[in-house]
Every structure is written in C-alpha cells, then in structure tokens.
Image 1 (tube, rainbow, N blue to C red):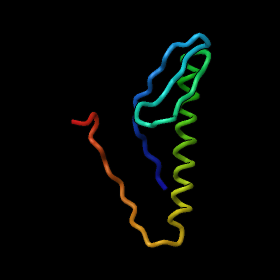
Image 2: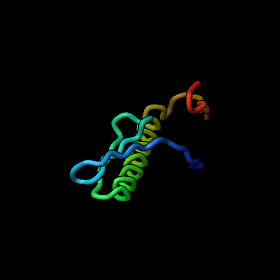
Image 3: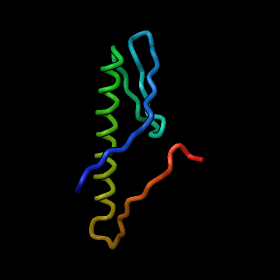
Length: 79
C-alpha cells in the first residue's frame, strides 16, 4: 500500500521538566521531552505508531468481508 503524508497541528507547552506536546486533531496522542526537539520527535513517533495500530485493527475487522475502501479529503480549516 502506498503511503502518503498528512499534516496535523502540534502544540507544545513548556513544563517544568521540558515540553509536553499534543496533536490537536488526534485526541489522546501526546508526548513529552526534555527539549522541544525531543518532544517533537517523540510526538511524531507516537502518531506513526497510533496510525499503524489503527490500520492493523481495521485490517483484522474487515478480513474476509466484502468491503469498499475509499480515500477522502476534508477541507482544513473547516469553514
């Protein structure tokens, strides 16, 4: 399967122990790091893991079933 790129908004908050980052569009996907660069890298890595796990769960759910898979777009920011 071809892989594409998708853009999200990451927010990084300075905390006493470094930075806490989260992705606005992906609830529950957050990471921390001692530096902004480390927090950014951890957040990207975690988002990739979440997408891979969700894809695996979807594949297990549709295995052996008649299904339609489509790509769709969503305008951003929403009107």
